[in-house]
Image 1 (cartoon, rainbow, N blue to C red):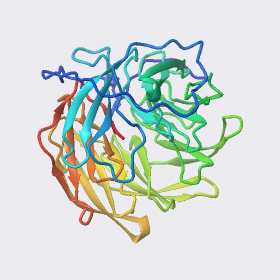
Image 2: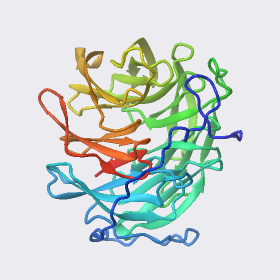
Image 3: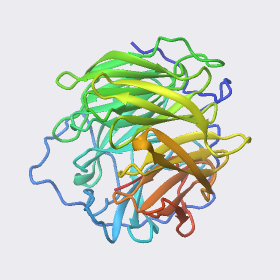
Length: 412
């Protein structure tokens, strides 16, 4: 079972809160109504135990076309319990050609939704409730943003979640208590009670850390293994997921150098390599991955391009063709561009560009990868970049969009 504890983390080993860098937002986005999405062919079964919460209209469609055009839906994560924070999950649209963002309301009734993910069918949105008694919430987009209910994660301060590609399981990481949880997803998109919960009790915490801090829980490219990145123990844990029962069995551990503070892992599209962003020592690592066993083997740390100043890597992205990788740098407030070489086995640092905001917490591609969105926590803005498909160069597109304590931007 998971142990309790405050949702804290510390690049330097101290005990400052995850919300330490939250600032008051001075600009507020306008609220506008947008059409409701098309309902599914078969109505989903009711969720009697999960009352809906008030919400405002949703985007017209939640399933991205192959070549999107016109307004597309954008969902925004925030903290609701801090000064200047949001009121729930922010709703917006963006122009697929220009990246221009337009505010479109709020899904209320969701507490501290600091990270968001969408079901593979595009009809249900999931959010962490990053609170001492953590939860995960399901929102049925195809039912005018009906909140289907919240399930406890069994730990504190959940900061990441993802949906297994099969669409039947939700994976979440409890930062404060250093545990990972699995929840079943029913036909309506609603969540059932946890099927498993594992606390990272070994190895012991890294230098200056008081305990484990699970920061990410994601499925490997083979589909049978799920990997949990733990900043507190300097370890990436690989589990085999029983896709019938929703239970976890640990199969291996990959250890970074002590004090690295691994935060975020992303895979090369060919599935044999992955890239690990280390928050505490400001490095990235190329890791070999064996799909048959789920074993991850980290290589040597390499620079982020931010120089000698204080900076905390946040998240990495890799283009679907495997040509370029991008890293968000908090503190340096930049995005690093890497060329991916040797079929994924090598990253070559190309440059960094200013992010146009303060403390980029999360980055995401639009479905066609022509745009890159960066959620800037301290400035309360979302920056949008056009991505050159040939060179991978980033060019800021217009002025950043004001969004209260922006910690996640999810374009569909």
